[in-house]
Figure 1 (cartoon, rainbow, N blue to C red):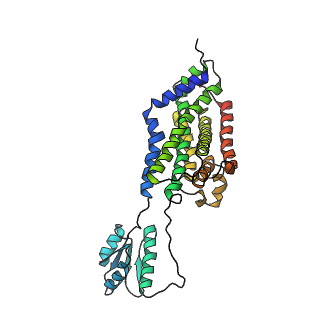
Figure 2: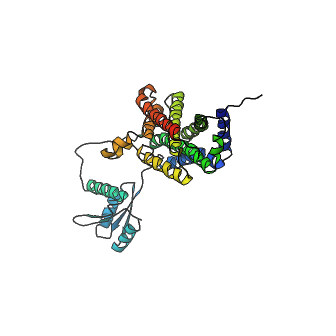
Figure 3: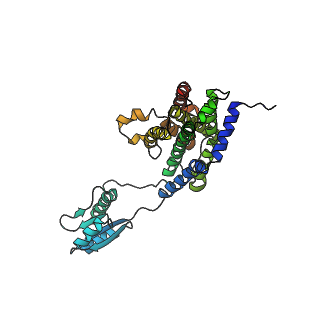
Length: 344
């Protein structure tokens, strides 16, 4: 006679549910890959942007235009005053130069490209007039793997996806089962509450490793993303992060009665972390008043630790206090879920 264990049967059921939902597979695996490809192309290494500059008609307009055309990044044209204003208004040019004494720059100070164009054009005109810099300088462009924006971005995308996948893959599914009265049926079976919760966590963990491989593999194959850390350290860190985030998903779903309620709660938790925790840019850009809040978020420490392990080859022991904080978030969430979970 075959003996069934509640935990193993629930775990297998969770795997079957996931495989039978193709839209879930898309959001877990395909979407982050497409996002990484799109952002990687947008921020790829490329030549400097061209600066479109108009010179207003004047007796010295040709001389000014000639001085500016000596810089290859400038696209310079001479137009009448009405044409210059129309082109600037329609975004066809970033700056209008009005020759005279003094030279006048016409631009929109709320457009970053216009402010940058003003500085570059002023520098070009000053040099053409004979200005010399008292201090010699030189430029060095950094393009090697590990220093590019895409190298910063991919670990952040992995953290974002683990957070979203863990919370939606656990929290939303549980509330949906509660709405469909399936949890009541589970409550009538000979299993413990912990069996059900561990099966939800286990189902999420089973799909975590392919998720990590797909995202990091895409970065390596398409963008030459460097992986300098130990592979097992990366997998352990990803496993810990996914388990902690799944604990948050369990906590928000333990008493929610509607899918709309749990959706709102999960977005309330995820959106601040996506914005503040260093997914797309460093958390240090935010004001000092926000830093204490940012530093207690689990995704912040996960992203810091993941980048240190992948890009710097750091050991897990060097990230001990970050790992401890991530584990604490998951442990506390699971503890309160066991106390507050309701079947109906």
